[in-house]
Amino acid sequence: MGEKVKAFGKLPQILTFPFKGEGWFGKLGIAALIMLAGGIIPILPGIILLGYFYEMVRRIVVDREDASLPEWDDWGGFLSNGFKWFLSSLIIILPFVVIFIVMMALNFIPIFFIESGVSDGAMGGYFAFLFIVQFVLIFASMIFMVFMGVFAPVYMAHIAAEGTLKSMFQIKAWWNIFKKGFWEFLVSFLVMYGMGMILYIIFFLVLYTVIC
Image (tube, rainbow, N blue to C red; front, side, top):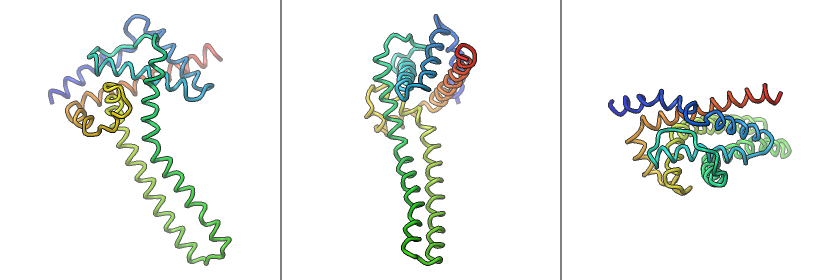
């Protein structure tokens, strides 16, 4: 209970840190412009923004600093570190891609049934089988999405702490960290979500005022 109170006691400070510190407005503005560039240039701006979040998390986890907005002074580092998080996301998404391909393939099989003159009974049995398989795959995907949504901040923070992509596969290591600091990771998830919401608000303000 004490860890919970301690973690959530920091929440007001953590949620307001983007609006504190020297040059906070300019830092958020640059992040919003990079988001805007993401609508024109694919992938690259998003990786840079991931690297910016990576540096923010690294300072909290490794350097034990209070949450703050880093300076935009290491674009190469943001790109390199953001690429680690980007690859980790691709690895997580891969099972969903496989499931999607399997579902699409199953939907095309009836075409071959029609061409080969398969009976209506066999077709009906296949569609019943297809419905069950797709239901199981969709349900499994939803469970997996919820599971990874909970643990994404954990393994991403572990990558930032260790500095290598392979650390995401050190499940035992980051699971132990998660058990010891559940409330801290819950707070960190709220911070990342809040930062994303702030950037989206700034993005649309810039889009509909300065640009439009």
